[in-house]
Length: 296
Length: 183
Image (cartoon, rainbow over all chains, first blue to last red; front, side):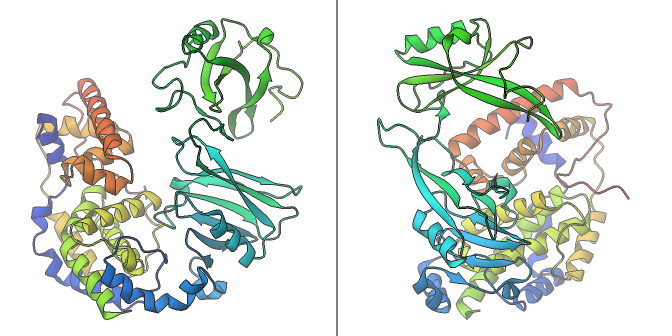
């Protein structure tokens, strides 16, 4: 143990060794009795880690639903969570007038999600698109064709309180006004263009390990040309809106509009031999129509 | 519930109870919180019996559940779905027996430790308090072993930097990950 670790260890309120015998105490025993007396409704139906014997024992209990690949239940049956659907890679809760989809597989099959949409009677489709193999998670987009439909996607941290192995979640209305389009990613094949940009400095990407952030445009261009890659530009216009700050990204900006001294926020790639530099204009620069500070 | 599944749960419960209780007590300022965390962790586990790994992997899996329970519920918001009065009484007794820490060096580390971001604190806690190696931590946190190594290295560096700024006169002894809400 390192010297600092010895001091950190002393910060611990109690050690496991101080709790020897607690497992056979009254508190442990009564809690166990209380828990096993509750209905053992599984909060998830997917089992991958349990031993084969136990898995076989459990399979019988859900055999009917397993044949269908998924099951649909009335909300009243799972009143505590509002669960209305559970499939191989998705659990769906009802929340008011919305459905919450919890994706439980980092590479969900589109057919699993399409099946969920179908069973819930939702006007929604799943697209499968090539993305960087380095991308975390495969959920890459959520769009609606209906005006006024509110859709929202969130990350794992927002959903693991409900479903421990949740990798991402999204919210869509139960009765969308237009078709919902969900985009999932799959690892692109070598040389295949990405449908969604990746950070060009990630491992495995053309500028792996290179730090371009806060470099000038001139410096970044030199690095990129040194790698025999092309350059494209996007301007990052800061936006102050109610509730915080963000930015509008103006894409496909001609090089003539880029000042060589402006700084780089990040660099992305579609795996097509071109690096897209996301450039921060100087604060004095006037944004074009549609990218003004007062336009969220 | 199938008898086999129940016996699997009971085996996991008995073999991990003391460690999960310790995990909760080391992170919770009050016996009420610690008892709630332990009870909720095992209740979730019971309802997800089909996912419990066998052997020592069960302990790591349960640390992951407990971590999520702590992270996702502030005090008072935890759904108390079990009564666990006896567990609470035992936790209260255990808390009452904990001696105060008077060593200034430990206090200084406590101050620096408390100023770390929660992710760094949890990482170092898993390594030092639970005695997990990077491979085991990676299973608890659901990330790669290499990522754990890198993050541990950075967390130690940040702690060392904070320690340089911390004088022994700053008397915070323990900073739980789950603080008590002000009354």
